[in-house]
Amino acid sequence: MKVLVLLAACFAATLAFDIPEPYKWDESFKVDYEKLDEQHKGLFQAIFDVCAAPADAAALAHLKDVIEKHFRFEEGMMTAADYAGYADHKKAHDGFEARLKEGQVPVAADDVKAAKEWLVNHIKGVDFKYKTLL
Ligand SMILES: [Fe+2]
Ligand SMILES: [Fe+2]
Image (cartoon, rainbow, N blue to C red; front, side):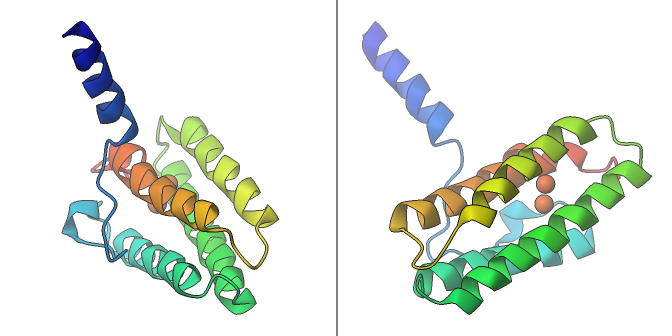
């Protein structure tokens, strides 16, 4: 019984948030800042496009571009608001960006899956912490 409880806890920790299928932004991802929500929608779409065409260099370049623009914009809002969680948040952005920069076509299915999960977990687990504080 104890093992089952432990197992359940592991799954809860690793599968904290559902990955939308098809991969698309929905209201459960709302951070309640219009520009950020719009940008997040674009990130879902950009990852979806890479998933649909993993050998398409333009799709990957677009994803890198929208990620960079979104991170800088979001970081700008956090620093402007003197947001206390900025340093940790910035580290999370930098880590993902570094991995993404190394990405080349054709993008491996595992890397697409990792990106899908990262975005979902980042928005709900990290971005959500700045709600109402920016
Ligand atoms: Fe973020
Ligand atoms: Fe974000």
